[in-house]
Image (cartoon, rainbow, N blue to C red):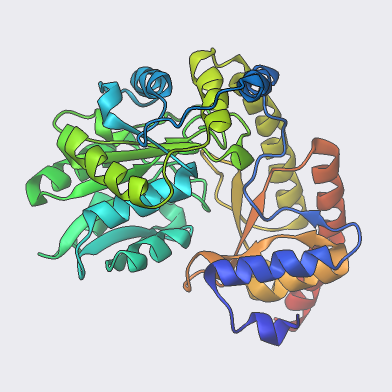
Length: 391
């Protein structure tokens, strides 16, 4: 695919086109997708094997295996600070299905949802599918991409049904501060809208920052729907187990839609998730050390090659500016793939305003990530030098 052909694409179509192009380039290093590269923990795999050995495989309730719902509710208290019962948990076929179920159950045609900009564009697809309208709320590097309550308040209308909050953010690595979470909570109660809080990266917040679950704030129980899952923290992306936490009537509505479409999550995946949820966080803490070391490696590499970025406070991503090279991010992404054999995503894959940004992940083994930095550095420096000479 040519650069001109790529320019006709945006969002997910652009990201997938670049991934397809990378497959045609020998020895390309992918720093694009957000799938953990670490192995699923041994105790989780062992539980799945035991489940597969069972000769009888009964169909589980649509809302999820009862023991798993209990375990998730218990974890909701420790991971999210939410005081909920198992009846307030819906087990979903990955976080993506959870998102679609929330939008399908919550929205009426024409309802508006405030969404952060930049964002993972699958949110827009789910909103559009349910007949809703995405209204983008700008975030800014000077605020470390924290979603600000004053920006939200300026966009609230009588049609506002919900706010989408993603913390830590994909793609920026920004997190919601406690101060802003409290102000947003006050807005939700004042204007009677729901906060859909996607916390899938919540286990990976970097010191000295804290993960804040807005649903744990006073009076937010009926104003919050929390989305999370097992893909990121336990490296279980392919197992497809997510969950939704909400008031029971909302869970019942989503379960009815799920029952009419996909039905319950596969037994083996739920058994694996149960083993993950019931164990301690030792494997997560180990992976956090690895991801933290990679974060430091990539931060130094980007600084050395002259790409400006906002220090990510959580998650697996760097949101770096391409402007020092004199190139838009799509052009630089294309040239890095062709000349350095490294795949990174242009900012326009996450919103049309972001043509000067790149999303770069830390999800490769440390030696491979180091090799990617070494490949990128001379290419970036060469284009930056050419841009400086033209100035």
